[in-house]
Length: 255
Image (cartoon, rainbow, N blue to C red):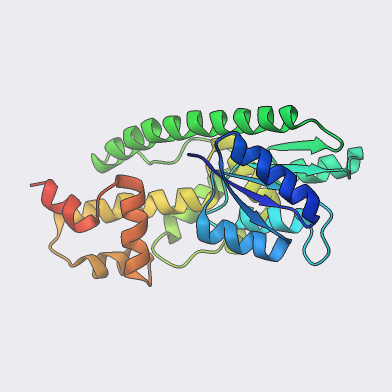
C-alpha cells in the first residue's frame, strides 16, 4: 500500500482529500501545516507528498525546498495542489523541484491521475537506479571506472564528492564550490542524473565501505567512520536500505 502525505491547512479540504485517497486504497497521512508536514515527511518517508502552497507559518515552497535538501526526502515525488496558479507561481514551484502542479478547482480524478503518474515514474526510476547502481558498483569494485556519469555540468560536483566523501558533506558545501545555489544544484543534479546529490554521496561512500568490508578485518563502526559517518547506526541503516542486508552479514556472505 503506497503511503501518501497530505499537507493541507484547511480542515474541510484535508478531510475530503483524506477520504478520497483512503477510498482509493492509499495509506494517507495528514499534516495540518508546513512545519508538521516537514517533520512527518522526514520521519515517515512517504511514497509521495501532496501539498498546498498558501500556508501561514511555512508555505508550500519552503516545505518543498526543505525536503529537497534532506537526503532521505530529496527524491520523493511532490505535487502542489493550490488555487495559487499564476505562471510565476507554477514556474517557481517547478524550479524548486515540484513534480506536478494542480490548480484548484479540480476534480478528484485529476489528482488521482497525477498521483498514479508520479508513482509509476518513481517505480521506473527505482528499477533503473537498481540496475545502474549494481552495474556501476560492480565495475568500480573491480577498479575499472568511477561510479559517476560523465556530465560536463556536474564534473565539479562529482569531483568534490570523490575528494571529500569520507568527510561530513553538506549540500551548501558543494554549492559553494561549484558556484550554484543549493536549490539550483539540487534540481540540476536530479534533472541530469535522476538522483539527488545526497544519493551520489551515499553511493560513493557505500562503494568504499564494501571494499573495506571485503578486503579488511576492520569492525563495522570503524569502517563507518572511515567513509564519512559519525554515527555507525545511521551507516548500518543506510547500508541495509540499499543492499537489504546489514554490513556484517554482507561481509560474511562474501566468503
